[in-house]
Length: 307
Image 1: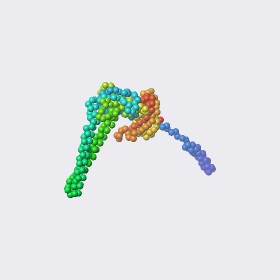
Image 2: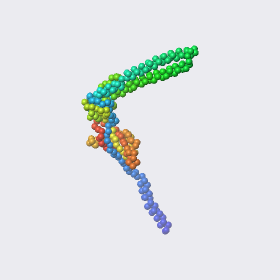
Image 3: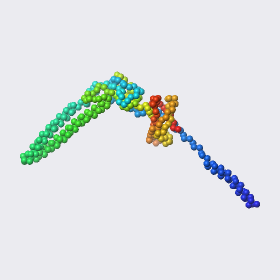
Image 4: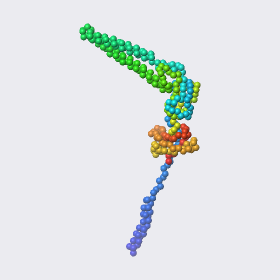
């Protein structure tokens, strides 16, 4: 009787354990839900790409302005004509007039060549006299030394003349770039043409760049690209770690009624914006965005979303 009771108890225990085991086995095959990737939202601002300042090399009076803000210009297109002060033009002419220096060098070279010819004849005569015992060896050596000195002087004079001409050529090249027109020494044009250094759009014009006004040396225009435009933003270190150059993001332009565009991440700075140890590490991001319809402007604020 006791044996039967024990057997029944074991069977009951096994029956109770089997459903639990089956439930455990089934539970191990359930796929746990994966939390969705957190979207990243940044604030940024639009900038013109590679703006280039246009500098006036000399002061003067504005004769004519050829372009205004918003005009599209080619590289080397004239932007402004400036009439120079008469004294400045005279000073530039003097710098280019090398006739006196060239003439002086040429006369020096001719004199040395004449002296060298006389010394050579004297040396030849002394060589014959020394062989015949009619002149001292010391006189021959002294003449030979004088010839060596004269030859070195001739080389120096020729180099000096070449340098004078090279300096003039360099001055002409520099003035040709500054004046925006050919220069024929010693003549200097009374006006200069200020040209666009790159092709692009006139982004800014100095208030002084008006006909009849005096303009000092300095920035008169800014020329840059309006397409594509740049977007700059900052991201925290943990956010930067998940970004890759070349990724695309959705850009919302608040000033254009929350218009949505697509921008490409072009660069991520390698160093944080602040090097202080206590400061949080933010990195500069730079994007490019199409502006073929010319609707974007520098300074517009945008919202950048990585999904």
